Length: 331
Ligand code: SAM
Ligand code: DTB
Ligand code: SF4
Image (cartoon, rainbow, N blue to C red; front, top):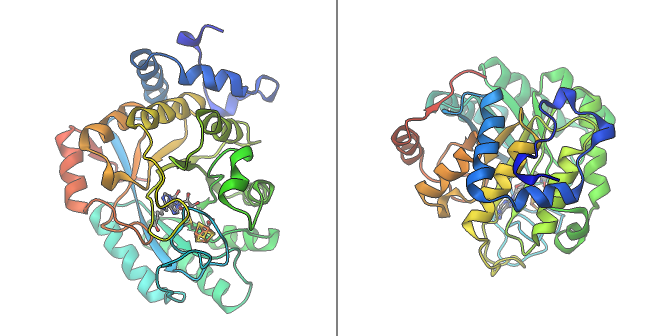
């Protein structure tokens, strides 16, 4: 294959399953010299987006800590030492107040996360539906990440107006069991299928820097690009090593590998929103600019992620302005 000119799926709508991209082809993309890879990613990006625009979502942790899952990267798991303190489900009013502030700061989407294996149907789930309706009425896109869903829950979230459901594959199928033992990769795929069948757009991505190989990174992108419907939104997280977790001492990933992974994601999924997600607080502005040049076009705006630190809103706005870029104000 001529890797320098490789380009798959000019548009996801034209993604022909008989021509699904192979993991070998993805690994070949990773090996393209950076100057050529960046140009190729930029070409794909500019066919679908204004490359100066950044979309901002704001996170709010609607239920924090005491999670039964054992995700090795997560400070909210009750399996690890020093988990973040438990906070029960927030009130609908408090979530809407967070939504108003996020909108005033320039966010177009509120991403509400709960530390659940899966939501229990009942009063708490009813409150979650109320949050979706309320956030929509503020003129924001609504995104939820609540763990595994059944068909009925996915249908009710759709009815309430949910725009996106975030459910990350996190890593390759092969590496997954080294990171999480309390659910399987197939469980993740099953929830993504249910969400898509309910007509909700999917936000699904992963974490880089958990000790995985490049082949695992290619494996994650292979799974995302070959979903029956590719995700409309892909968060790329850089591991934030959290005290007390099994990954607290993970060696940091090379900066340029993050840039490469974003560029390859952009080439594979040209019309997808790619969010440079957790881990920006340890990235220089210059590295973040490279990530945007590689095709990332979103960030989480807000002084905090779910529980971990994020650059301050003011710093992010100044950074974006210094690049001659703008926060997109429309959905
Ligand atoms: N409990 C739900 C679930 O796991 O599906 C939703 C919330 S969970 C915190 C959302 C995502 O945050 C995870 O899938 C993971 O990709 C990311 N994340 C969590 N902790 C992280 C960390 N320390 N560094 C980078 N990303 C992290
Ligand atoms: C995603 O991929 N990253 C966001 C969002 N989806 C929910 C969460 C990042 C969490 C980082 C660790 C924390 O704040 O606890
Ligand atoms: Fe729980 Fe989600 Fe953290 Fe895993 S990533 S421990 S499911 S909150």
